[in-house]
Image (cartoon, rainbow, N blue to C red; front, side):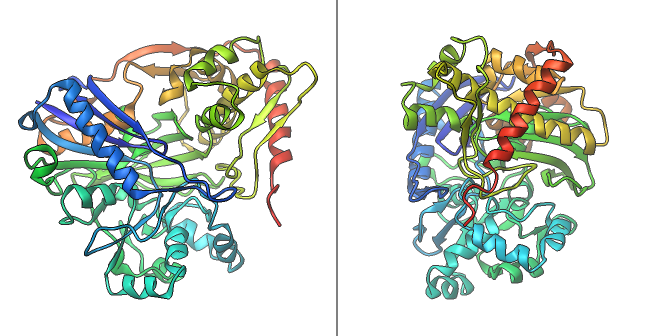
Amino acid sequence: MVILAFDQGTTSSRAIVFDHHGRSVATGQFEFPQILPSPGVVEHDPEAIWESQLKAAHKALEIARIGPDEIDAIGISNQRETTILWERDSGRPIAPAIVWQSRVTAPLCERVLKEGLEPLLRAKTGLVVDPYFSATKIQHLLDQYDSNRQRASRGEILFGTVDSFLTWRLTGGREHVTDASNASRTMLFNLQTGDWDDELLKIFNVPRGMLPRIIPTSGECGVTEAKLFGREIPIAGRAGDQQAATFGQACFQQGSAKNTYGTGCFLLMNIGDKPRISEQRILTTVGWSFGGKTTYCLEGAVFIAGAVVQWLRDGLGIIRDSHEIERLASSVPDAGGVVFVPAFVGLGAPHWDPYARGGILGITRGTTAGHIARAAVESMAYQSHELVQVMRQEGGVPLTSLKVDGGASVNDALMQFQADLADVCVRRPVVAETSALGAAYLAGLGVGYWKDLADVEQHWMLDREFQPQMSADERKKLLSKWSQGVECVKGWQRE
């Protein structure tokens, strides 16, 4: 018997079949289009998300030669904050999904800030006021037409993050649910009560009737339509991708931390069973909630990490395939003084500047494509270092090692550079795609496939460890240049 994990990401949908040892048996993956209607605005077609995810699942099962009777449960890991509105009766989306990266609601956020509401929102949600989160995205979509808000008030239009939308489609519209890890990313969820907050709903003018029911992160919440996979299969786990990755990395002890190098970079630290609001504008979020217990995390979010490689491929055209980036970056000994700040859609933690835009600085006549590629790759480490520094100050326990995962974590040079910059031991597991693994673990725990957290933890295996080797003087010099670059791009798009 196996667990089927959905790993619905920002640029592709993946499905992975896992066995009882937490090993990947087979993978199906398909990219889907990125819709970029104007600078800083990012959208997805919800139908493309659904179709690519279903196609990926069937591909993984085909490769694994697994029949429907051999699947114990399905778990879902999903891109978070991305906002989808759809009709209750037909299931059809009423508009493109607004992606977490999108800056389209920056003016709405400005209004909230001018009204002096951020302290209230920080205290209740653990978040900062930023277009990143779902509340202003819902408000924006409802504001497009008066009829949208009226229909939403009558319960005819539903809101969901991607986990909700996939579950709705998988169950044929029988289940409109989400879990606390995803709900805590909407800016409508109260960390203290563990429920939607009426005061927040009023601030953003969001009707309660369109929101999904909040259920545990692990546990059965319905079954798939039989026609999708040949029989009804329990859906038994769901979590936002970064919380799922933290779970997949077995960060079950307070102070344990992981950094995911995906489209963005996301560093999460387990802070235990009580939420704590950051003083340096990093986020407090629900990690997972089941068995009557909730685990909270501090989180730092970098909006553009691996996506910078996609831009080098599709926008600049200096590589034909993303896998070429490591070879090109390694063609030069260093970045040659070039600093690449990939603030394509603003800056995330700890800066939170939606008006910043990308910049490549320090270019000379001697600058080559290799230098730009190396600076692009190194930008992931620089941005992550800023998060490590804040976590050290606010985590409450020493950060002695950092677990890593995600697509770019396979780049040995990047992982060594990360260890050098952050002056921390970087530990890479055998299974790098831990978002899917975390979803599988949550689903498996929900149906008894795995017994408990100790049963899960024993499956974590080290692939390679990277120890810091850089001198303090060299580290200080590089970080100073990076800080200069960041200051140059701040506020660039502000009118």
